[in-house]
Structures are given as C-alpha cells and as structure tokens.
Image 1 (tube, rainbow, N blue to C red):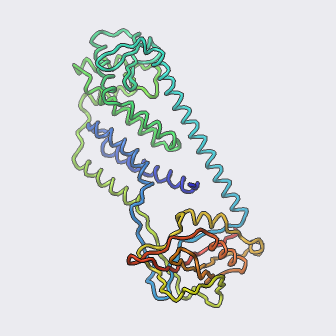
Image 2: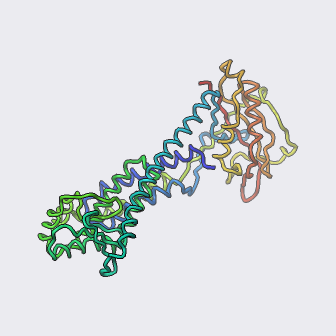
Image 3: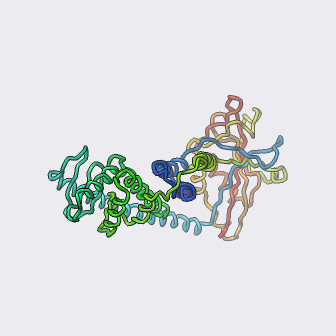
Length: 420
C-alpha cells in the first residue's frame, strides 16, 4: 500500500516539475510564433511531471568514509518518537488525506458537471445538427456562445453577422475541430483534478487556450483587416463554457497583436535548451543517491553488545560493500515504514527522558534470513531490546549479490529515540 509520505513526495516532485518546465516556457516560448511546438511543449510538461517522479533509472552509492576490514554498511536512520508525538503525526496524515480528498472530489464533480452539461445539450439537439465538411453544426439560439467541442461546432445564430463574417468564424472553429484542441483541454482538466492545489495548472490552462486561439486565427482569416474588425466586433463576451473553444475570447488584444506579426520566431537555441531541460529533469528526478556510511571502530563498543541470536555460518565470508546490496523483499520504504510503526518507545524510558541512538547490527544470510543480530551501541536495555526485536520481526530480505554470486552482507541500522 502506498503511504501518505510517498504520495506527498510524489505530488511535491510533480509540482516542482510543473514549476520548472512552465517557467522555461514563459522565458523561451510564450511570446514566440512557434504555436504548434508550444502546444506540444505544454502537453509534454504535463506528461513529464506525471511520469518522471515515478521513474527510477539508477542509484548512485556514495561513501562518506573509506571502508576497512571491520567496517559495516550504515543504513539510513530511523526515528522513534514518544507515543504522543507519533499519534499527532498520524492525525496529520489523516488531515492530509481529508483535505486532498475533498479537493479531488470537488474538482471531479466540477469536471463532470461541465462535461455532462455540454454532452447533454449536444445529445438533445443532435437531430437538429447540420453536417458541414465532416463536422456537425448545432444552433444554440443564444444559450451557448459560438464554440467548438470535439467534432461539434455550437453555433450562436442570434448575432447579426454578414455571410463573410459567418464564413470567417466557421473557419476559425473548424481549425479547433481538425486540430483536436478539445483533447488538450480535457487532459488539462483531468490533470487539474489531482493537482488542484497547484496554481501552475491554471496558468498552463490559460496558456494552452491562447495557443489554440492563435493557431485558429492564423488559418481562419481571408483579409487581415477584416478579420481584426471581426475580432473587435465580437469582443463583448457572453457566458463561456470550460471545455469549449469560444470565438469570443477575452484576450482579443493579444490575438490582434499576434495577427500583426508581433510574435517573433523561436530562436534555434531555445530548442537546444529544451533538450538540456529534459536531461536535467531526468537526472534530478529519476536518480537516487544512496549514502553508504561506515560505523567507525570507536562507535563499536563490544562490551555493550546485546546479542540476541547467533549463527554457525559466520565462518563464511561476510561482505560489507557489494555490487547489489541486500534489500527487504517488500522494498526499503515498506521496511522502514514497518519499523517506524511497530517499534515502541518504552514508557520507562520516556518517563526518564532517555533518548539517543541505538545501533543494531545484523547479517543478511544467503537465504535472506537475518542472523547475528546485536546492539553495537545502545542507550537503555528496554530501548535496545525493543529495537532488536522489531528488526528481527521484519520480513525476509533479498540477499546481496557480488561478482554474480549470492553473498552474506553485514548491515547496521541506527535507530534514534527522541523525546519531544
């Protein structure tokens, strides 16, 4: 089961991707005339933000000190808080689920409401539609402004328009249909359901709508001055529908500036920058850095070792640094989550405010079993025993691999007991 921490981490990484990629769009492409490229750049931004946080291409291992014969691999630290603090953390997890869930439910209902209202209108008036050049035109009689939705053009037949103006507007809406712009809008709205908290999504949606209008305007006009006058004439907007492309856009001035040729071509170096951005995002989001720390001899107090289990196989060679380290069968995240949720802070230790770091050493055998578990350095008999017992109660591990062979590996996990 995916934990709340993993969900929050994924949402955070995706939001960082959105912010990073959209910032580059504003800097490099927003006011450029490469509208088709801009469209697919924004769609790619959504896709990369969705996928990159899930991709794990490789793990770098970084050692903090040089290993020696008696060194052991030191795993990431586990924190155990007193019961009151642990309960508070759980409550905050519940609060996160509630707030995030309510946002998803609200955005989903909003999406469904808009979508069903359009589909309902189309279904009810489908028999009155007119086939024209492969798409269908439905008169709205002022209920919906002239707009497009997938293969349908919703035509407001109440304004007084000349035949030439009607042709211009129909050409504009036909571009939206043939270019399948409605797919972009639906995808963005679906993305907004799960990333409702991220304001970047609203800006991406606005930018995508601008790009659609620019693309349609460039292909729709016969005479530039006549088309600009038509845009000005249609500037008084009516109600707008979220999933349609209304000809009466509120950004008429931007569209007129675009038609005047005030959008410059995109420099070639901008495209090269996109390749660099992609590689940078892959490296930062898809590669993990795992630190292999080594417990120094000074921290290994043999006199304080609390041994729970011995093995007769310790005569075999035991490795510390291997090509493929041993890992819990259910994954490291699940193992750490299990230890954190199972390990109890002894009440006597809490009352005495005993806190500190317990080092638990163990060997992962060739069959994945844990052996030779002991406390290398402890803080309190009860804390030490609880830490040791919890480590041993975990699931089996996948053994380490070195030079193509299954080998034993010695591991140490530091567990910090902290009184709030």
